[in-house]
Length: 224
DNA sequence: TAGGCCATCTGGTCCT
DNA sequence: AGGACCAGATGGCCTA
Image 1 (cartoon, protein in one colour):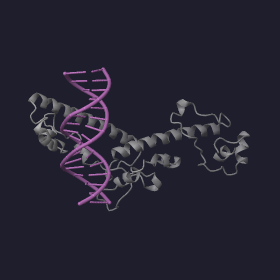
Image 2 (tube, chains in turn green, cyan, orange; image 1 turned 135 degrees about the vertical axis):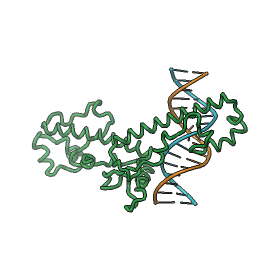
Image 3 (cartoon, chains in turn green, red, yellow; image 1 turned 90 degrees about the vertical axis):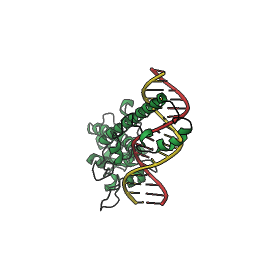
Image 4 (cartoon, chains in turn orange, green, yellow; image 1 turned 180 degrees about the vertical axis):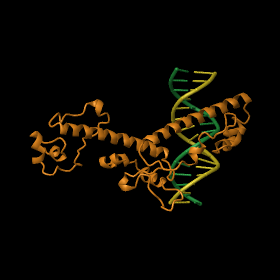
């Protein structure tokens, strides 16, 4: 996680409005004396705490077989029950066994599909950096997606920054050349290693190596 | 108790 | 026709 701090994780942390703070709140430690703790809010935002697997994770895959659908058993989620009232008058309630078993198989398929989706989300959670601690609630689905998106953007920025640093170290090798599209798929704006501030001693220092304004110095680049 | 998140069921639509 | 995908509806669980 050190790299996250060094790179500045604003973009990574900036979840969409409504999901940032709420996602933080959702990261509260359950039953902990530490009190509410932001899932991503700690240590200037670079300290990621994730959650313990909630009941949802456990319920995934615990479901009954295809023949024991919620419609029959009322397992999890009352849609089957509630709709049973509706359906009794028409749809499934009086449907022949054949259509009923068809409905059950469709339900099972949909359940499987959602489980696959959740597995994929778990896989995503496992590769985005946040604390995978049993004491903290896991990321919600929406927070996972937003966090992953920002993480990807941040990695793209880091890549460009590294490239520019390498060019800088090689002194004057295509410092101002734009990234090839293949290396900059996200169209990110330039990243300055000096954090957007003028290089101390700019412009003398900037021109010391290359004899021209440095592409690494925002101050130089901002000049008309 | 309200709100957030989730799993599930369901019907509709599109694709193969 | 069957499967995948989607969105709406519903109820359960958990936390503040």
